[in-house]
Length: 247
Image 1: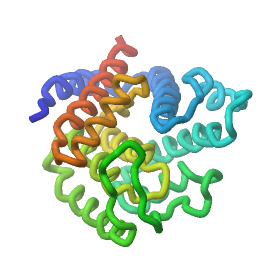
Image 2: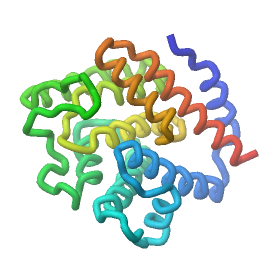
Image 3: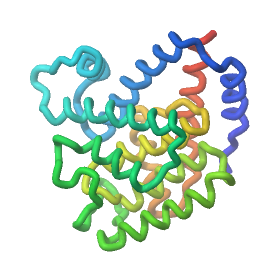
């Protein structure tokens, strides 16, 4: 069983110094936006570097030799973060509309036909032995996911809740593209509405490999603990980064 006492202690430390100074919040928001966008896109194969991602986001410039789609993925992800933050600020509970809206923001101008719509075909996940549910079952599976979420959101630790929602979502793989990015955005929406900073799964080889391996283990063996532990480690890193910024 994953232990959350260390995370709870760090969260309590952060809560004691809230509200954070506006300049600190602004700086942390900008830093996390760039890192979150870079790592989430890089996990899915985007080749823009961290610095190039920062240039696209903060200066509105294009990077020579890089595909238009890669630039759009950066811009779209940033807009999706804005939407997530708006949901947190306005206390909007996660629902199917929010799920589809995030997908629309992630995919728009890349695949407008499918943006915001569940897949109409069966799919396989590259590098995985898991076969997602038949496309005709997607709506039922999403309904079950939100039923589970509404039952568990007051029972589970927020980090466990966020990690399990992520896993259950990618297990369904409801969209034709963008599922990984959306899973991480929704995971962070759950964390942020519970007062945690966003967890960033790093694209560097060791953590990226572990991320895929633990998801695969959860999918094939229903052993979710290694994945929950990985996300817990990411949340701990983010909490430490926030605390370091204000000390």
